[in-house]
Amino acid sequence: MLETSSEQKRFEAIRERIERGLVERSIPSLTVAVAQGSTILWEEGFGWADRERRIPATPHTMYSLASISKPTTATGLMILKERGLLDLDRPINEYLGDSKLQAHVGSAEEATVHRVTNHTSGLPLHYQFFYQDEPYLPPSMDETIRRYGHQVNAPGEHYQYSNLGYGILGEVIARLSGKSYADFLRQEVFLPLGMLRASVNIGTVLEAFQAQRYEEDGSPYPFYDFDWRHHAA
Image (tube, rainbow, N blue to C red; front, top):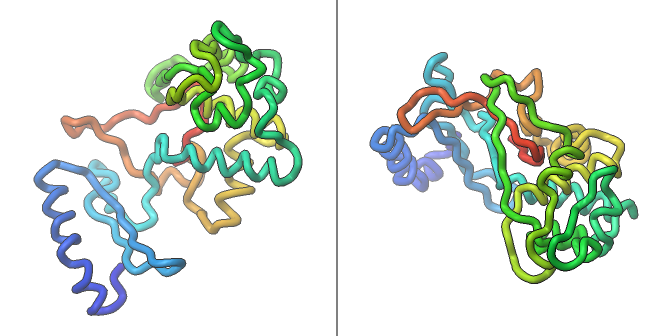
């Protein structure tokens, strides 16, 4: 929250704009923070994190980061690189299990960890949702790679955003670290940074702090997972 009268005055205009925007656009909630260096100048939650249960948003409310979490996956890779467990210029297939990337154009050997990370490996855009209120469960990562890990462009030819690629990077992290992707990020990234309410999906003790997703019509949106698990919450 604002700590001094000067800070209150400094951010009052944007604060009023946020409050007005939530009403005008029927936005359930929003949490903001402004930092300068290592100092948080302002942090505040607006609206309801959960409308039905009347839980207000706070600076510590957990929101789905979606693809903003990709830099977190890249951070995990760099930790493994610094420990000598990973060579970014080696083919990513060297770090996978029974299922490997298949090349229909170019060579799978040219699909390096580096190229998968910067979306130039030749993998296509791919996403598939698995909703909590449906009986269908995501397949294993090996099965996902077998079904969808097909290079449709020559590695290095051009940029193609690929969620699947980052799911595969999460699999590499799990295999090299001997931990699940979620455990590795919690132990090696979130906790050392003091991010006590950050997790991959929602941990069992963190459910009360998550913001409810909503449809455009305002109805609650069920929690969902993917067949490539790299998203942090």
